[in-house]
Length: 186
Image (cartoon, rainbow, N blue to C red; front, top):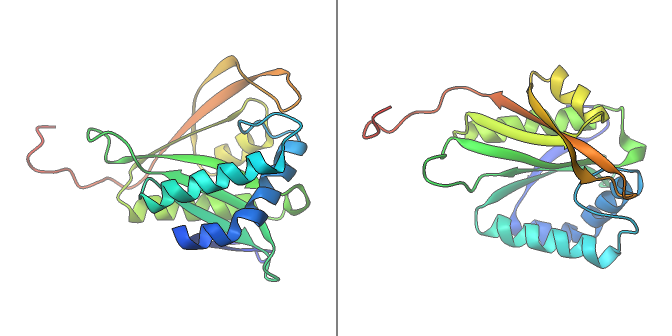
């Protein structure tokens, strides 16, 4: 973990208390050009609604939410692990919404969040992780440095916040093997 921030998991109850600072991170990233499902101008109420939905999903056990905080308590980044999949994919999870404030980038925050979310996945017996990112983004280099494997790219898959078409690159990472139920014939 970087000396600039500490990473920790939030409970569903805590997310409610962190909706405002999480909205600040999301808005900062979208205003900085991050293609993370939102268009400009991003209304604060939309960012808050997003985090309120995430809190409900967390309460149902469908996801895990990590935050990176400066030691003064300011939230500077976040990442989610989506864990709810069909019964034939109990070993899989998706890494989602890796967000780091622009003023906290290049300080190891994203690498710390990624390492922490991978550890949470291992602890949850997840052995296959999947994520996607905007093609050509700095995030691609981060994932490659962390041992993620590029699967492929879909051109013109989404829009940047400014409304330009952009590609999406998919990655996966295999973690330690999961214990397979003896009843399954694999």
